[in-house]
Amino acid sequence: MNQLAQILPLAHVQLNVEASSKKRAFEFAGLLFENQLGLARAVVTDNLFARERLGSTGLGQGVAIPHGRIKGLKHPSAALVRLATPVPFEAPDNQPVQLLVFLLVPEAASGKHLEILSTIAEMLSDDGFRQRLLDAPDAPTMHRLVHEWATLQHAA
Image (cartoon, rainbow, N blue to C red):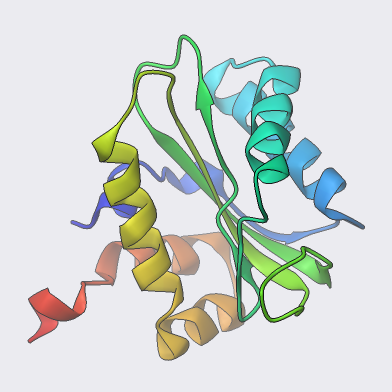
């Protein structure tokens, strides 16, 4: 099982989310993590914005990996969100973002969160896989796709 699949429960996969801006998408993530993990939504959104101020987490090709370190969080957690309508994100290719993987890691996380980010970036840079996520009819299908994805090294 890949590193994203290990930290992505089905309840954290959300489709057709209405968000009119990056700010609204971050607020949605804050509410999701508050409801699912008991984290204060303001802490989540503040940490996501703090990281975003260092540079956009938009990768290009309509995807972004907003992430943040959360004090008191015991284990990394992720959410996969597909927006109903793409939003501007200051991505390198200037394309709006529709597919977001939110990653929260413990405040003291070091190399582990970089490995997870690398896995997510590799996954989302796969054109076919990204399109399957965009075309998935429901959250269980998206969740299954993440669980079935294998790195190119394992597929060979």
